[in-house]
Image 1: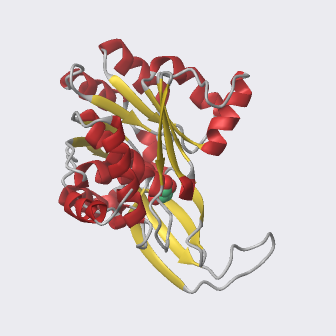
Image 2: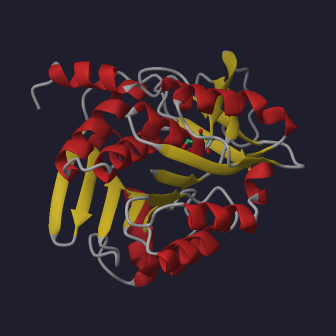
Length: 292
Ligand code: RIB
């Protein structure tokens, strides 16, 4: 089981011919509403990859449909609180190359309650469960400290990246997930090389180029599969959730990386974040057609 303490967002996605410049007014070519939030995307990726995941978070009164989507995907939602605040949301612009810019507004994601965190950690099984978290909810420090004290393995996606928030957690986690820019920024703050961050396992995503997993002194490189991207929103979340689903249930790191690369390659060919994440049979069929 993966206990995912994570955000749930309503993604407002605007397709634009190009990213607006400061001061520019730009007409969008389309608008759609999707389920998103790094936490929710990762939970859905875990579930669609066949993993068992409980999502611990919060939505407002406007978030019932988001819970239904998570439920439909097979995510356990019984510990998602109903907060007295609007569900978190994101304003996302996506250009013709599928690149995005994202503004997030935390809303209910910032209302995670300490007793919800505590009871979930008390009722889990540190011998087999992983704890997963990102930077889009409150209480990240508390979640890591309490999970560590109980002996859970902890995966931490340091996004959105704030060095001051990430650095104090590094000594207590097992798997750090960052993109290449964040890895360099962290390394700069810590005055170490980017490939020498002080966590046993570090997964660095390199966008369209692939991902690299550092496991102690071992390195596993996973190139991206070549596809024509339509929307890259949530690709990193898809990679992490898919990887963790397989890795935490006994697959080798190499197999988990390959699966994750395939899942995110498929995900970027469709619009939206959570809704675009493929299931296991689609990923397996994709992988059978590949020669790498
Ligand atoms: O990583 C992509 C996600 O970031 C989006 O779904 C958006 O909600 C923001 O949290």
